[in-house]
Image 1: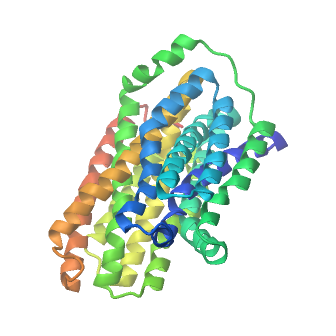
Image 2: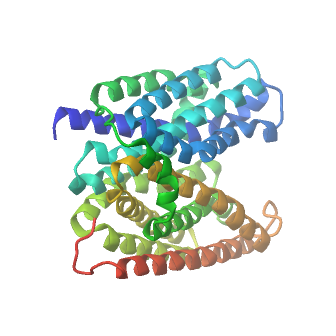
Length: 404
């Protein structure tokens, strides 16, 4: 691989890492923010929600703007906005200022996420697309896993402002790498970009990929919503041990992302999509009857490994055949489907767990375990639905063709 290609991948990886780090690093500072601004926990939650809502609201339009005005140009603008917003967060004199700055940070992150995925086809050959998709998935998982630990260190040494200020030098580094190594935007026909959103939604294969992405993201989110209650109330783990167990999923995703991408390049995206969903179905089935810590951990490892394989394969299947003028839009749609899936998982599957385990703060371990089993029984049904959709998409293609 040439120095230019390596530099391009580093810049895209760092953009993805920073966007995911921005989501998870703020969580650990919420108690300190409540104390610093003398306000309630519900009020400081907007520090996290503002970021997520800003990403969800604009990510598709960010992709469309990249298609129209140039993906490299827009990525540089998004990185600059992200870095400036990190600085504004770090000097915030009030909670309202901080929340507003987090909205700006989320807008920058939306551009970074959409452009990083959309520029894969501009930086590597089609034969290497899968492994790069796996690499970006790994960076997203690493950012999610690193957030609480890095944030905790910064918080203990320099206080809550450092949690946000760390993004300034990292953002500046990403800007320098992107400016130096990413390929210059190519001119294209503006009218094609203008119509790409509706053209994309008319593609049945794309709609299938987006719906499957939302389904599996909802299932993964359930592990973060239900898992802490099962580990603490169901198994009686102390907070520090619970934190270690909760980090297993992101760590597995970080380790398995690149190998998943290599398998996708070698064996084909459609087959690997089905394989990933099959592993996820096994993991959900095991969680629907798990009893004890080791059974839970084993099921979680299987589920997360399947998710990494699915993500690399499905993203490759969706992005490979997209013409250059639509890559930003389709990348935005993929990120939007994932975000919506996370929201549905937190809301719907979380509500199901609360309904099957009434009063979770005082419920007996048996009641918490029943809630876990019921939630992942429904999650299993969601994965099986995704399997059916993937099989229909696979059957529509030549079974002898090694599709990427």
